[in-house]
Image (cartoon, rainbow, N blue to C red; front, side):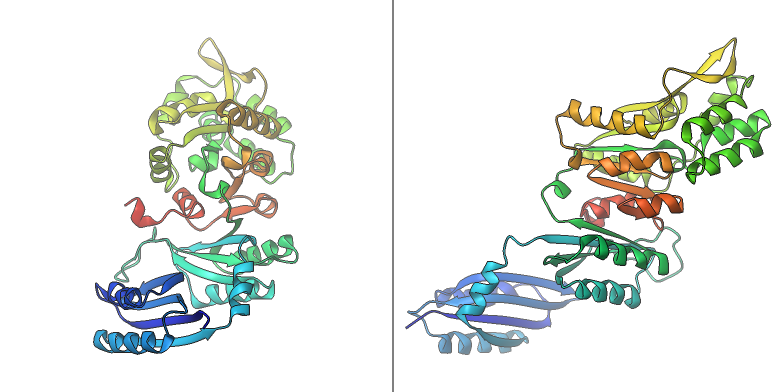
Length: 404
């Protein structure tokens, strides 16, 4: 006699003790569990088990006892015999690449899910599991900060990963959702450092624009800022031109602006959670150290790197002290921070919105273009445009229920 392999599928209304009762029956017959998975949606159970019935036991009595137990419990139960060759093929699939697709937005529709599933299938990948990461939300009234997120676990080898990533990101252009595609590897679950750009990322404004308004040159500086963020002007050149327009501004203005900096939605929730998980947290900004230091104290950050304003006789000189922190410098500083911590760049998260953030976004294991300009979204591997900064937690596989 030879062993038998059976796929068991159980569905029905969930209540405590179901899995234990079925497992007890299998235990009485000496059955081995080769694989198991269970999900409950709105109190409805779906349980699957791959069973190995040893030669000394026969499948007939096992099936009979399971059917009786399922009837007693009010469950539906199905059995599918699995051939040895099919089982060995399944075993041979282990070690194959696995990927995670994270779909997030204020709400998710059937069309969103359909588009993801069709693209995944077109690239010959299988969906092994779908998990809801966001919490449940009420339908009574509209919540502008509502979050919806599901995570797809994929198995297989795409022919061209770049094409798959492009097709998935195209959904973000069509629908009001964001999509992230990552390798499901050890690094994804073992990040150690996160760095933020400051202006329009960690805070909702461009500080230099606020300074310009106070100096009466708001329109001129805003126009240069926008061109720089779009990548139309070299950052160093645009920075010098904007800063020169601030010459003569009273330094006392800095304190008033710092006191009212609006923190981006979700920033404090993200930072406090990552702090709890042991992350180091910093700012790498082309803005100014005065405001970055203010945020470091306010948000309990570890370190900041930015441009130091030159002030003489209580007024801005229109210049900075030391080397300008541009895109290349951000990448250099990020490398140094990772080296100092003794970690791989794959364990780093970088978040920014402007063209000068692209060098550090490309270096980091997880580079996120946050509410970014089109040129940045196009060139970054990951982009979030619909939710707050705390949605980055979903890209790490963190569920809402784990931090609420």
